Image: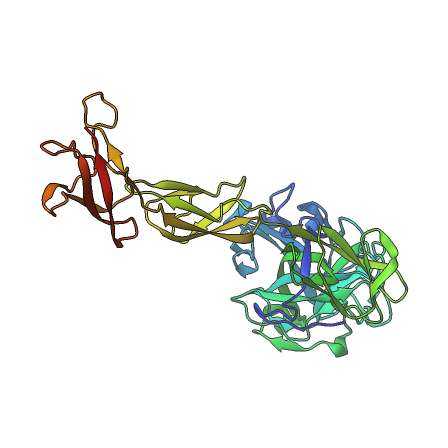
Length: 476
């Protein structure tokens, strides 16, 4: 499989990547020896400086220019961003590796043992950053990554003689590589792609694996070695090497609210599939490329390939908002009072129709109030009707103003009146008493025993004009 990528462009923009990078020390930040300028002139391989990395397990008679640069040596020959190969900031961190070739056949490689083996049938996203060095007389294409099950040596062979009489052959393939000639020295390229492992690979080797007639070269400038000996050199910087498993089972959502659904679908998995749920691995839910699921509790779903081999799994977490109503459906609010509407629920978030975000609010007006209660990003909305207390008026039909302290006044009992007036008339229609204060009663002063008429006018708690008439007996 190949994938050609250019600066900051990804051939795969999708996929759910697992977190673990299988490449140890992927940005060459962990070192046990700070590189010096003379180290590079003597052809010291990267294994002389950096943990986990080797000069690609090559034979010792190969031309070695695996070099290491780190800001710990700045501004000497092994520094960052200034070093013997030119000027370049690290793609990340403060270090990077160098890799080179001479005459297109004496090549250098970087190699490492993966943190854990790749698994056959699993999908992996492979990437690394590469930058043409300022001092590179030539630019090449075909840089890439190959995987191996053992620390492979690029064996001598029949292609062309090297400096020490050995011959080199190359695999003429790479699992991930770029067809483009990498020639812009000011920026880092990203070479990346997806690789379906066809073996349990343990080792990664990075470099140019192609025969001479398969490589395209572009001249950067004329160098002295080329002028005098015809030797052609290419120099590149490497950073941020990554091998990360891609989940082949994708879910539109991994966290849902009770009653919602999630779409599960296969990702780059060819052939027939089998969807299974939980521990019921013998029960197939579906054999389609995708499936909608509506679990009522947190559930794990499994994806099997056509050989009935488990490929991937995903757990859909199910969350529920408060299941019991918190607010009453309605309540009353009386004159000159306020009430507390309390929607407190442990761990919840709140959004009231009033704009408040507290668990409770104080209200003093009638109306409908709603609150959106959220728990684990699942929401339920409750509404309460707040109404005013009804007005009441009780009028006695007799009173005895004899000074004994019992029923000495004619005074109606009223609740929740907005305005009030009481007039009392004798049998000839003459007004004998009037008041606009509910707390003021008539004591029958200067009046004889008999029956009197009253007219009470008031505005109730709903601002309605009301009146009540009747008679009251004055008994002396």
